[in-house]
Image (cartoon, rainbow, N blue to C red; front, side):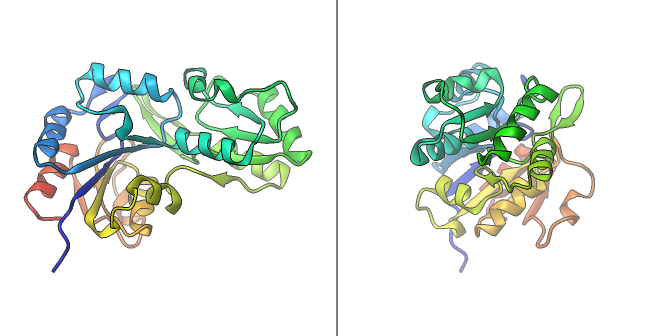
Length: 256
């Protein structure tokens, strides 16, 4: 007999909201999950804002969540920097600097840490990072997202710039966020993967990443989803749903 789902991992951007626009019905659907007494963890590769800023923005949008339920790639990157006592050059958005302010030093960086940072992805900054890598600095990718959804359409993620740095410096980046198995295992916090399900809009980072860690995954057709995404991975998602609302319904009616 299949084990009962006890834990739901939920992506944020593209799954619950797009910038400050809520996916229709997402607030109510999240409340239904809470009323079912399921354990909830919000797993996100969002690097555009600090954990405090993200929490405050989501609660203002009307989502019922607790700060400790957010497990982000920023937090994973911060932990790695502290554990290894790295001196990082941070290519991250200014709104996310709050999470790293105490880790910035005047010493020569020995690591280049890259998140989504449109204002930093210019020739001078990338060239500075390139030269550090040539001198032996390590390359840390908070995540390698290919693209993300903005109100005006899809936009390049940090993956393109990370790959460029890898190519030019002949260095391989260490990825700390989704879709790495370590990220999902840390998010589970000891929960048996077969008792968990992931809901997300990114077929590779959310769905394939979760399934590689033994977690069932539902792909939602919002955010960055593009027609046919579910056919680009093997095995495919356990279910494809129009939105987070239908994904929650599938969990609650026991069809997952």
